[in-house]
Length: 308
Image 1 (tube, one colour):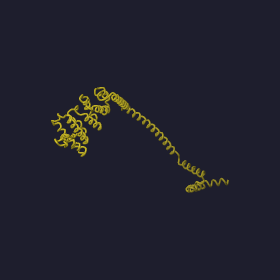
Image 2 (cartoon, helix red, strand yellow):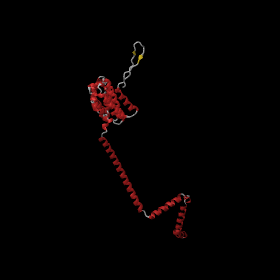
Image 3 (cartoon, rainbow, N blue to C red):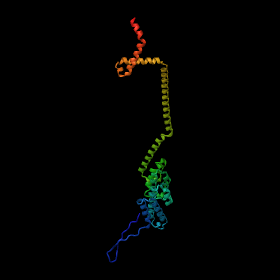
């Protein structure tokens, strides 16, 4: 924002000398340079904010601003933009809009580029609802429709505030008002309507999966789980009954039958595989014991029969 030095040629009388002269720099640009240095170079964001506020106070109290209104408006906008960046770096973004309103008094007087910056800031922190009313008032001010950044503000308002917030009816209404006709061309308005239709379809699809349908799905899955649990319970009961019957049958078998079964099993093993006892010495000892018992108990009776 520093004023550019002008070079003038002044020829002295009777001499061909060339003298360079430049007007003194405007002292009001010094706060802008200092604030930018604090913000970008020194990273002292609080000092940058304080410098911006002091420079804005000086501008507001200056009597020369009526003589060169556009110059002072640019300086004020530059200080405000640096102040917004400093507030964002200090994590004080919630107070950005109120701070800007302190500098300009009314929403309608805020320049378009500052409104754009505020929209992007609040959209970035997912608080675009804070800017809704302020931007709506700014757009409907007839004096702002002639600004160069009016179309950009309207586009940001449509794409980043109305549509994400689900205000599709208000977005369509905006396209048919003077704001939409001034900010957008016919092709842009048609594309905006298509975007609203897509947003409505997404909303309708998401509404189909409402909590009631989710509850129905949960109830159905719960009923399926209950049926599966009942089946498992019945199977476990049948298995328990089978094991109970088996245990009763096993208990009813006498010890004598068990001993007989063991003897039969032993005879089968010995008869089927004669080589098996040689592999297991304890079977040989058992076999000898059984032979000795047999000869002791039934030997005399067997010999008496053979002699007769």
